[in-house]
Amino acid sequence: MYEYDGLCKNIHGHSYNLHVTLKGEPKKLPGHPKDGMVMDFSELKKIVKEQIVNRFDHALMVNSMVPESQIELIRKTTDRVIIVDFQPTSENIVAYIAQILQQHLPGDVSLFSIRLYETVTSYAEWFITDN
Amino acid sequence: MYEYDGLCKNIHGHSYNLHVTLKGEPKKLPGHPKDGMVMDFSELKKIVKEQIVNRFDHALMVNSMVPESQIELIRKTTDRVIIVDFQPTSENIVAYIAQILQQHLPGDVSLFSIRLYETVTSYAEWFITDN
Amino acid sequence: MYEYDGLCKNIHGHSYNLHVTLKGEPKKLPGHPKDGMVMDFSELKKIVKEQIVNRFDHALMVNSMVPESQIELIRKTTDRVIIVDFQPTSENIVAYIAQILQQHLPGDVSLFSIRLYETVTSYAEWFITDN
Image (cartoon, chains in turn purple, cyan, yellow):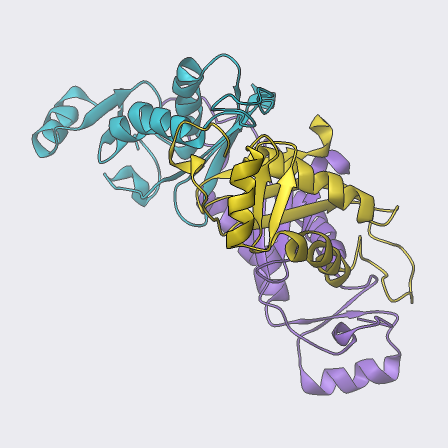
């Protein structure tokens, strides 16, 4: 993290744990394959996997404010560099994930909350009601 | 699940995990056995056990739309068949549980939310505020 | 617990588990050490450790209604007695913790909720919105 005053200024990794909660009415369509579901869990998991996990897993998120020379050095150590225009704190990452997921969910459900565990004991949570 | 377009159309089991949250004021009755409690945890657990766990544990919930001939076959394999007039998704089951519990809670507390984990990673949640 | 009608009337211990959730805007201060954070997790943990864990860990909370003679006996068994003017239920303790933390958090964040697990399956939760 750019200019952070602790150990986290160094490149480091997390085993993030992501909880996505949707809001919606269970479909009332007797006989329909998705009857009684807000959204099929397997469909939601597919979207999260494609849009979030596959994109960010084992990647290194770097603040665009980091000097270009340092970014060049980082690129020599990993192919999976993602430049973002924010400090990659849990708070900012969870809002970024919310933004991405909102674009990929079907129209009849909405995002309710996203909780991102940075460690087992620390998480950031985003609520639609605050946004 | 009747007419579902995935593996779950077959008879299958879950190790559901149920979280019940009440809302209320801690009693302010100094000297009273339940002073400082919204509701004694042991009383709540007793109600949940009697009304939900004992009723649904190791039972098979079957949508009433399933043809009678099939239900007959199912009855030969288990004594614990529960016919319900909805598709037994987590979303519908959690609403059904809410309905039952609301009838059995004392008048000075109210149901706040019920979360039903179908698996460790998938849950449906019901909030009184949405109902 | 004073006058409780169950086993918990006896002196007993819990491995409480405390979840503290704050609410706030991630700071938008590019280049600042705390950019992108609502509050540095390590700062929050420090406050919780100093104000709550250090104070209550391995201590015995006793309702001030307990007769003085009994409190004297208790003091002979442990140095860490905390006399409180409420029944030490999870519900009351969580509200007490909320009160303490609110006095020690920086002005730009607010307490959102506190969840106190008394056991793995029983918790009391406090929300700012209810208070």
